[in-house]
Amino acid sequence: MSDQLTAGVVGGSGFTGGELLRLLDGHPNFDIEQATSRSYERKTVGHVHPNLRHLDLRFTSPEDLESVDVLFTATPHGVSMEHIDAFQDAADTVVDLSADFRLSEAAQYDEWYDGHVCPEYLEQSEYALPELNRENLPGADLIAAGGCNATATILGLKPLFDAGILSGDEQVVVDVKVGSSEGGAGASKASSHAERSGIVRPYAPTGHRHEAEIEEYLGLSVSFTVHAVDMVRGAAATCHVFPDGPVSKGDMWKAFRGSYGDEPFMRTVAGGGGVYRYPEPKSVAGTNFGEVGFEIDPGNRRLVVFSAIDNMMKGSAGQAVHAANIALGLDETAGLDFTGFHPIGSP
Image (cartoon, rainbow, N blue to C red):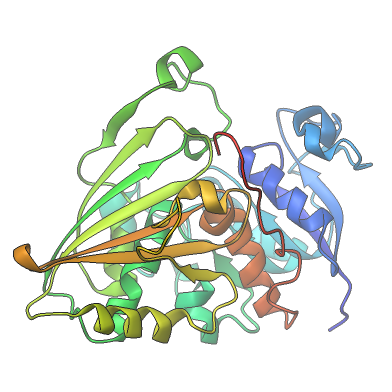
């Protein structure tokens, strides 16, 4: 395959679509051929995304897809499954950022979503998170980016499974804090500045849909709660883990180094010096990095595992580009080398 490839973005006017366009614009191997938007058809990309005003590109109708090597689809849930045939006709590789192909069985969509209209594609799809599914991504032609809250949780807990500290039968309580960008670009009363500013608001106390991904890919049922907080970018998961036996700090360091020591986008931050002693979304804002860390509470026989990501990067667009790089045999870090800012304001 040529090192220079064409790419398109369906749903390019949303927050995640804008992140995809930003990443593709700086990617050494992709040329952006098309970005679609029903709401902003014929408007320039810079009209919606002011950071991309330099792009000589206008939104087109999603009904008029151009032929490209890779098509990224940043659509609302339920849209991609309706149009997957057209997407695959337009591109050799489709990377979907909705929930439409993340799970492997139609019954899961009946339970957690509103069913599935083309379940025959579910077995074909590969989960995008490279730290979990790298070996199955090369050559994949339908890739499903993971949910941001599930991604943060899976990254935090995966080392405990890799090291045998968890088997899947233990009690695990997960509390996730997320920024306003998780709600997307669509306006709502709850997302207006007057209502959103200054909050720590439980918006999914139980039954969040991302539990399905955690259960499928870790084999673990978790008690899961999500809060909306006063930040723009970011998802931070705090996992309270109650293992069957004693676990030392050395065991934990061995587990996290064993899982992520060679991963280009994972950093372990566990109680060191300085201000940022544990993972925080602020320290990874705008990047594809994920940070994980832990503390031990021996008196309560509890492990506390922390993870932080930028929900629109590691939790969505960055994960999608990372997976596409691997699927297409490119340098897996291509286009993802932004290291972030410090200091920075609200992420």
